[in-house]
Image 1 (cartoon, rainbow, N blue to C red):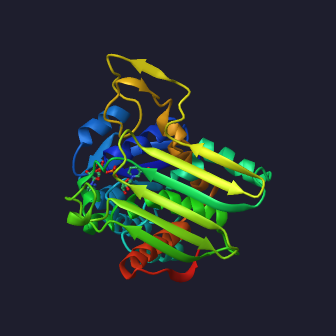
Image 2: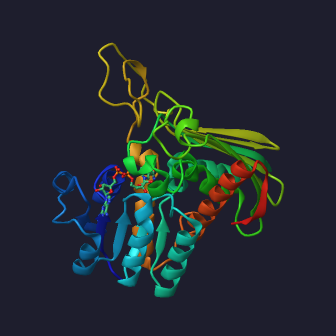
Length: 353
Ligand SMILES: NC(=O)c1ccc[n+]([C@@H]2O[C@H](COP(=O)([O-])OP(=O)(O)OC[C@H]3O[C@@H](n4cnc5c(N)ncnc54)[C@H](O)[C@@H]3O)[C@@H](O)[C@H]2O)c1
């Protein structure tokens, strides 16, 4: 058994930063190289990464990696997973798994065929508040679950690739709504309880968007899912929410309610007349009362998800449902069904898990 995993990162900016931060807290993973088109000096300097590449294929070929962390635009997830898998290297793939169902399916199949692991980096499954929620549900705190609402919303993506439907795979509902959909599948779904119907409504991209007319994908999306055993779930995502990234989950059961506030629940309340440099992701104005995040990367689940994946490599274990290729694929399938529902103006029926 290996005691240390050799990691290569693809990408050098937003997601690469929290992947590198997570690895820097572990003693069983070494980030030995990073491949990206820009920002290479900054990220390698910040985290002491010895080798940099502009071509991820060259990095995979030369660095004898165990694991690739994919922090690149959505349309590159598919070719990077295929290249890594062909070289016998495991992948941690950022969300969404891919820009189409066909690509996502091929990523799962190729990984299985080559016996390489495909980790789907849905951080909500490892967010401490949601792990506590899961334990509360397991002890029967709310009785039988009837209805769950989940959302991630903010005021717009920082990445040019995510503003373009071709390179993102959709608009905000694929790009951020995927968090809610995967988590709902994990909590309510699993083998005997697939999603059986979905109904979606969203803005149409471009001029039809509420605010982001330059985005070719939608800037607002909401959708209802029904599970085979009858529970309803509501997923929401948008770029029309000012004031910082708002991730909220509400669970309604026969014996109780759980409400989770992932991003505005800091124990610190700050009133500053001068303003502070940073409070939470996507908050533009930090004057007056703010709720400055305490270890934001940890609380969003990035640190423990990466520890879990590294452990799976070391112990030669497949990831659990929810952070595996199968859940990543089901999420893309369901979101495509939401898009189809919106276009056709009707509910789409199927079986997704
Ligand atoms: N789990 C989360 O909450 C979360 C948060 C943010 C981003 N993400 C995901 O992470 C991924 C990256 O998003 P981001 O916000 O870091 O984007 P970003 O725009 O900040 O950075 C994109 C990076 O990709 C690199 N890149 C582009 N083309 C490349 C190529 N051909 N080869 C190698 N590198 C290339 C760029 O150099 C850049 O470093 C996306 O899939 C996104 O959905 C996940």
